[in-house]
Length: 160
Image (cartoon, rainbow, N blue to C red; front, side, top):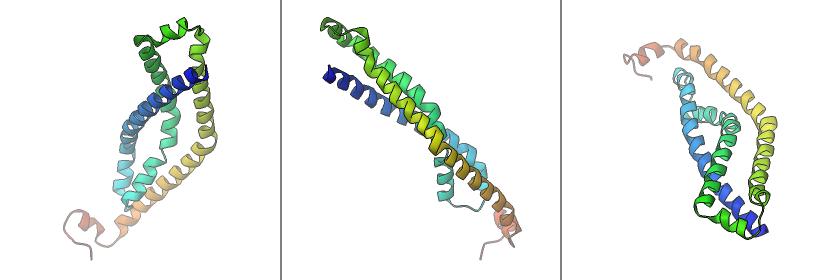
């Protein structure tokens, strides 16, 4: 019984990790376009831009994790059905609950993880992101106030 549950949970975890990473990378790139204008208008470096976009990851994870879990559970149990593994488990005497129990446990673990992220990491991330955006936006007028900065952006004057 424990071997079967471990096997199902291992398959769920592998599928979940793959789907979560693909969705996170895709949405992180899309989300980073939101910060491009703030970054381009300020004199901040690339590390500030990367830090700002990484601070948005906990918010993305709270949205993407349930979707990834749902997709991975569907994919794994569909593959089990196509490979006739579920039929073999029924023939071996497993009930429907025994077969679905690893998915329920997996979903419960993810629910607790999202809850902890939402209570601890997400507020701190939002606070840092807001402070950093304010800092970058207030640094914008300072760039314009520098002597020759406007002419440099037009390509007429090199910085010394």
